[in-house]
Image (cartoon, one colour):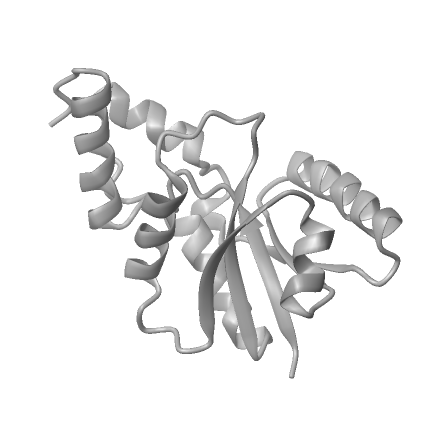
Length: 166
C-alpha cells in the first residue's frame, strides 16, 4: 500500500488544491491531506476551520484522510508511516521553491521522496493569498474555490475585518 502526505496551509483550500488531491488519490492508495501549522504564517482560518473545509470538499474521495501537524514534516511522515510527500507545481518559480524544500526534507531524512504533480492549467495562477485578497475587495472568486469556501471567506472578512464583502 502506497501512502502519501499532501501538506499545506490550505488557508483556504482552493480548486487548485482540490485538483491536486483528486489526482493524488488516483496515484496513491491513501492520501493524507495535512494542514501544517506554521508559526511564521498568519492564517485567516483556524486549523479546525481549514480541516472542516477540506473534509466538506473531499467527502466523495474514500481514500483521502484529513489531518494536521505541528513541527517538522519529516517527523510527521514517520508518524504517518510513509516517506512520500505529494506537492503541486503551478509555475517554474514553484518548482524552484519546492525543489529546495524536497532537497531539505531528503537531507533531514534520506528516505523521503517528493512526488510533484503539475496543476491543471486552469489553476496555474491561483493561490490562497490571491483568493483572500480578491474576496477582501469584494471580488467574485466562485471559479477559484468551492461555494462553501467562498461563503466562509465572506463571513470571515465581514466578521473579522468589519467589511461588507457580499
